[in-house]
Length: 402
Image (cartoon, rainbow, N blue to C red; front, top):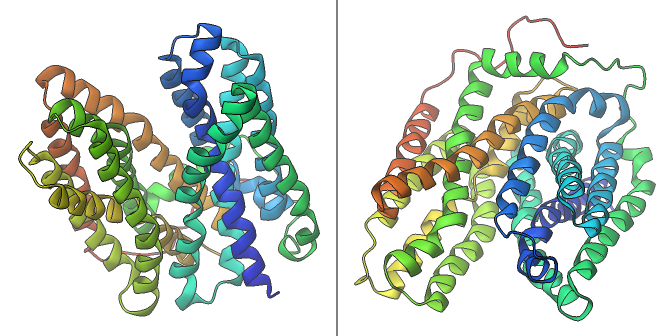
């Protein structure tokens, strides 16, 4: 098999397991709460710890990828998640905190390491499509969590879900080993590692207009993604009175659309339109879709609800591959993983901030619609900013972190 095809399959699988690993505890939390008497609210704290760890990991991983190679860092990612999942079996607050740190750290390594590999083998015109295909690992991981985690938790109890997910991560880490000779042959074993590299990466992202625009846009766009996942079902069921089955159907239709849309936008960006223009359009349309959700009432027909949900998810959950391919295209040779991690560190802040801000708006106004309307504004601004050509697309002459 050609190295490109091997890279796509291998990185899609590790991306799927990375996302699945972050969802195991939230999926089995009701079973754990019933069996152990844990407060279900701990899921929120657990998720917050994961994303703090993910942000720091994304900022710091560039030197490790350069020194050890993207394939080796992918293996480390899988091992960290596997160990974190096994630690969850202890189910005490201190150990679950450590588990969240390990899983968040491992999950954050998956995208920069895979970007480093794919950037080397992807033909430039096909890169947006290839990166988008790889990023379908995220919804695939969500489906795995929804199907396999309950399949193991129901017959074997909640510990069975953690053991099964950990085994999948650890087995894939071993199965990737034969690919290392090819995928990591460009590594630089003598590359130094420095604690200051994270701050250097942040400075470089912010100092380079193209990277800065994408990093800031990703905050608002992933924020809309988080809002969609956290509040759409609640808005439909609790806010508008639709039954839970209908609300779940609308939400699921959007997730299904997101899988196809990720590939479609990558194809468009690789064949017909500049990636930056595609990203601008996605930002503008997702903002409009969020406003449309704010306009929902209990009188809307089901078909209209589904159409808006599919438009929302088909933009707010489907831009990642195009943006990551553009970061890889603009990054200097050998710096793809580091700068991808730098951009993704900004992305992580959106995941943490937006649900909390939405909750504050909901608490203050009692209106889900107000939250969806407010979340649309930064996304629209980011989309419009993408229409402006950056002053330069390469990093200024700043010292490289060593």
